[in-house]
Length: 190
Image 1: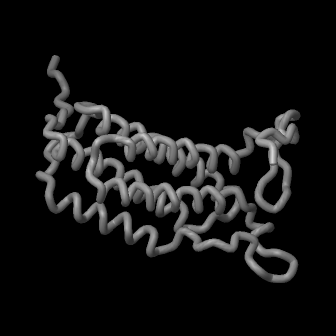
Image 2: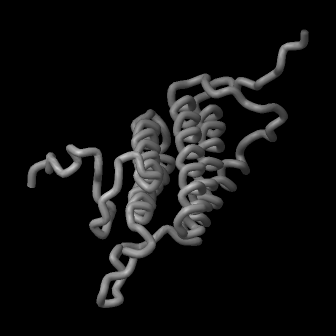
């Protein structure tokens, strides 16, 4: 199988199920942004961080791939003519969200209470978390907009929302683990 098919040379691409759409289609933007997010999470995972965090990030990357497949499948193409589901894979569900919430709670239990907004930075690994968090928020916004046009599973939107919270908490946890100072936002007075 060749990597290039030439079918996208006219500015269109196929969704799962065969429907062809423009490459700027909101569904493409949504799962393309999830793919971008997944790449940034790979950057975080490649840092000198604990094996437990790396394992959690690998699980999240796998779930993001699933989430992307769900977004790439239009609602009217989810079921085959024989009644079976087109995506024969475990979907993002309440357990996926629960995993993120449990990971957030574990990190929260070992962190000091936040008293100020926090500026991104302090260490490369921390900065990657903040970049990933921002990309995750963009993926969430695009998916919410897509949901206004076509029905998307609620768990997809909830998962993206919770993942951005996880990435924020991971940035704080890595700040602590790496022994760097958390940069508080303190507005200058005129």
